[in-house]
Length: 119
Image (cartoon, rainbow, N blue to C red; front, side):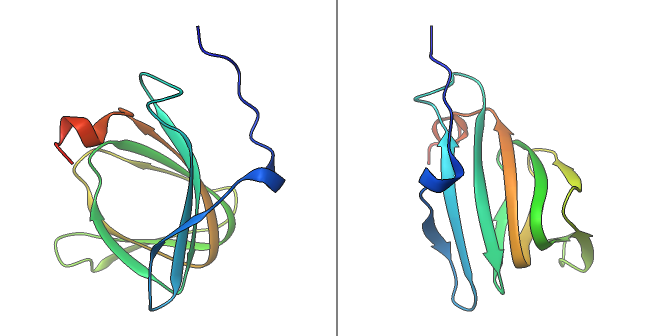
């Protein structure tokens, strides 16, 4: 059986994963090493636009700043979220992650999405 983990805010390490322009960083907290089913972490988006198609189901909770998703075939639909807002993204949703001083918590399923998609 796996052990309970406590991720203290002061010890969470972020790594860059987007920009320039702007910047994005991510702290992957729960991965395949911790769970056979779900993943979770914290991400920061500031002045960037990161295009991606989610290969998993994802829930996002906005913690700080303004978080945006550009959606649709031409990314013309904008979803803007504030602290406390929760967003559900089904697998295979094409999008752009954006934000202004945005910090979000995310949870995703399945945790082994990279393996399932041979990435």
